[in-house]
Image 1 (cartoon, one colour):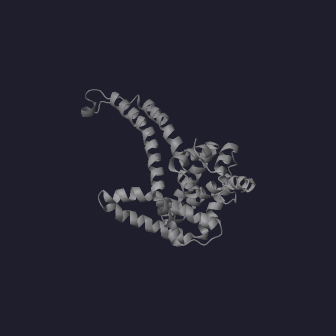
Image 2 (image 1 turned 90 degrees about the vertical axis):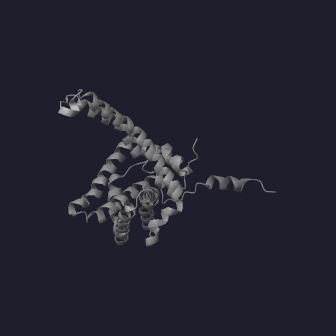
Image 3 (image 1 turned 45 degrees about the vertical axis):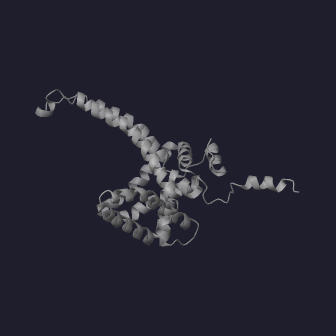
Length: 263
């Protein structure tokens, strides 16, 4: 059995309220407190990714390894803002302190989601192949009557991939803020989100739509809406896991030590 922090285990056992609207509002409030820093960070990362990506193989590998650590930086900054602190620009890069654990978390998540996607791809590929006659490729004589069934089957096979992709979304934050091991964080994330899976999914969709609205302004708006989306996600995680509470996971141990007999 995984050894979760006491607070996380309690929330998993007892459940929680998911205050959808509050997280949207708080996300906008947080990002406005350090909008210049968020814009500078995302501009730097976007330009840096384009430059590094040009380098064959090594560039792609570097991005793959660094992305999890860079992705947690905006959450760390949001947390400092939430505590009333003044973050520095270097705080956006603090994720490198746990580069290994964050990378393993992303890798395990990607492997599980990919394993779920493979059957869907095979189903679509096999269905497409069987709909073609011997000369279909040469003469275009293809029967598309079964394509609808194939697409529906593919989407059914994609359901596990969607489930795990959503369920593991809080794993990096649990690794970062609660110092959990990658696999334990993934399992805890699934259990936490599973308590209110459908409302959480709706929240992610709405936050994603808000984050994408910047595209309507020639992509310039993304410099505000995308960081706002990140802060909304942080607000949800911080509230559900009581991140700002003063509960001490070692309090019980200290109480026992206090009453233990002394020599």
